[in-house]
Amino acid sequence: MESCPFCAIAAGQAPVSTVFEDDAVMAFIPLHPVYPGACLVIPKPHIDHFTDIPDPLAAQVMVVAQQVGRKIMSVYQPLRIGLLVHGFTVAHAHLHLIPQYGPLDIMHKHYAYCENGQVKFGDKDIPTPSRQALDEMAATLRL
Ligand SMILES: [Zn+2]
Image (cartoon, rainbow, N blue to C red; front, side, top):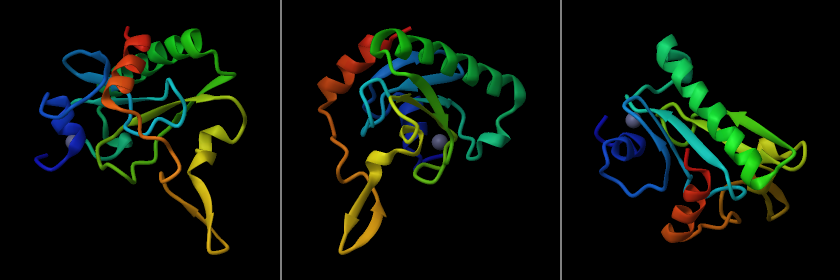
């Protein structure tokens, strides 16, 4: 899909801090990692809904997620690795691998903030590391 940022990444047409890549699957550091070691895993073909990924490709995606998750555990030593699929920000199936240090980390507690007396959600308080910092993070997880 032409305007899809993850298709651009998969096609090598956008900057990315790659952790893993083969013909079908890619893993990379998101622009706003909730914690160091947070990672996204995508199928390379444009498929909007995770539930529409053909079974063999879904299995490949999950195996890569598991392998990267093991590396996150080894390098960053969180209590657990969380896996989340929501699909609201980019309509290209992607799995969020989330290092968890407490039970609310899977819900990205860091995205919640209070403004004018209302609880809101967004990435305004999530640091945006430089590309070099993202590349260095990716290097720690490279398979
Ligand atoms: Zn796409």
